Length: 578
Image (cartoon, rainbow, N blue to C red; front, side, top):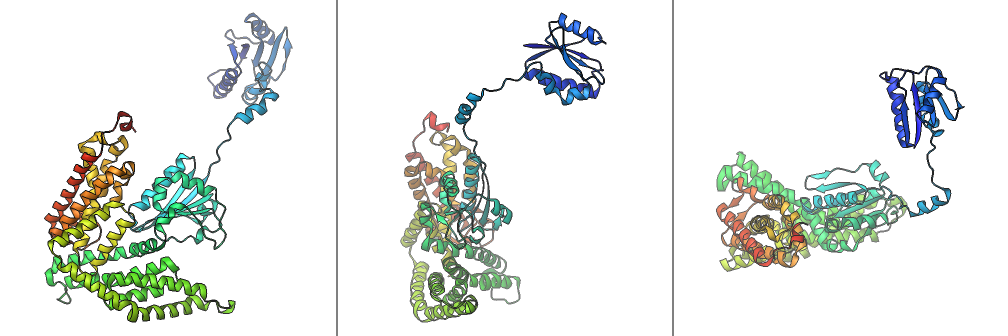
């Protein structure tokens, strides 16, 4: 260790002195130099050299006004500076006392090769969307953001839920994004991502393995204008007919919710004959809910099925086909048929109709709407509508007059479907069936479906409270959130538990949901709104036989708990702390 004798001829409590001395101490510590400070009031350089030799110092630093001399005397290195010089040239002054050790040139390449390359920071953007826009949309967004964070990246995700787009991406963010991930089970416009690395997949893929999706997206090549985006293998379950149907359902669902609640309020105010007394508030509510909202339900369903298939050119034919289906009594089945026919016919027509460049502008505003509307309209009136109306009439009659055994069977089937994949295709098929019947004033299946969809999360939440040793630490911590999701009719709250132990959890949930659904049907419960969970009980006349409905939900929840107790095994100590 080198020793430096310092003669500081200024008061050390002055601001500039403190700054200069602090810089000296820091640099000395870095170079392993011991500082020996003058304590006897030396004034002349000769006295300072003598004192430095007495203390065994290797060098002398003389800090005084206007002094900048350097050299050597009597074997002691001489350094001199004023306070500003010491503050700004500390490194250069102490380099003469104890040079910093530098790595040998021969070793530099080895150390450089051995050092891991720093991970380049990436910025990604994404869009998530699901048919109902309530659960999977936000679960997928959260999973993508957590996955990016774990990989050291930054990601912004736009959610297109039931209340519209949130956290919207700006053109600047899209421009600087290294990759784009669209995790959607409903149609999402992707033209704004032209020229970017674009990966399209489903929400479940994002929820289950977001890191893999991010890695895949970053390895893609940018898409050209109009070129299709890359799609993962996990996209298959949400393409084709299911995706198109769910796009239609997601757009018509707000109409059913608003219309059903307004009709329920009309009955609460005006009684069973609420729509008969023109000019009253009850009559007005019936006009808004029944004559307006419910009248738009089937046309919107058909239009957005067609839109999902053929994009904007399919909207006109879809709306017209859906309206005709409603007018001729073909119901929601006719609307679904009209939507698919309109979409695929318009898509074929758009691809087949070739026009000169001078006439190309006529195709989207004249030819496509005119020809597709004519074909779809005539087909609905003469070919598709009449047989679908017969099927709808037969089904409506059977549902309206079914006996107790039939009601139990239908409730059991719907209940099992709701719990089978918790938001997947089977679940959505049962939900769409019940929602469609609401427009025909058949409300019992809707009540059964909602009760059956609430019991999986509610049963799991109660089970984690009653026998904790069968669940992991993370599952126990999620109990409260799972209970809230169940009460709000968000079946997807049970997915993490089912994914961790599917062979035991899914059968338990199906038995509980089947119990709730069949009991609801047997007790004659009817629900006029397609969403809201337990909270719709606070709305007058939204549900008939509210007590029976509560009994159905509680019974399904308890059966779920009992099945979980019998099938799930106690976990080991290692599993419990995970």
